[in-house]
Length: 229
Image 1: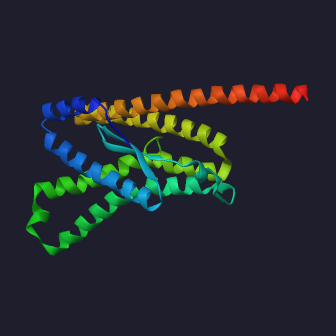
Image 2: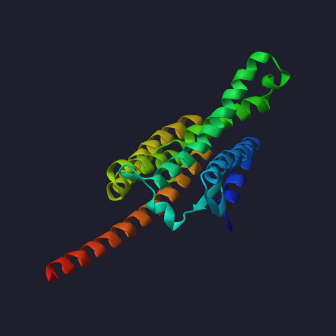
Image 3: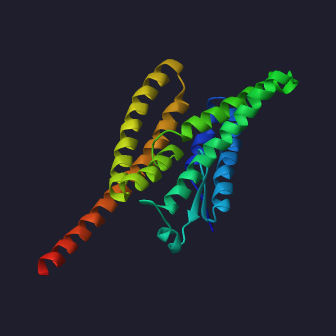
């Protein structure tokens, strides 16, 4: 198992410290880690082993090791591996939904805790984390879930293409919306969050282009072999 640290986390820490939102960022990080525990528990229950743990500005990211035999377990037109990955992708946001739903329900008990500022931060942090991660941008949880479902329905090649186009389109819309939000809310943190999403998207664009080049080479080799026959 490998441990990695994304150095951009220090930039985010400095940013929230300068904007007097350090407490909010720490609470978000704590529940982002709990969010990732949801992924971890789901992955372990489904029989996966953790291959990499990476600490990022938005929490912790896990990468599970996939054994070769997983690719051979078929279910209808898809692969059981895709079903498992889709479940793992949903497990994180579901964890945050359970937390903020429980907190909202106990509000009726008239406890002192529910009247405090920290209670409000915890509720809104979990709502924010759940919504943020369900954005259909790969490699966010929403993007991963859609990608795995598409792989089952239409196959890997078309799924990669649709996921790539969807992620890019949604991110452009988010960037335009965030620009208006920054103008009115005067919150520079929104800008850095969008920039972070673009960093993730650029990485995925490079992987997508590399995948396309490999597919093109394989296709050319197969065509040459077919012509020779």
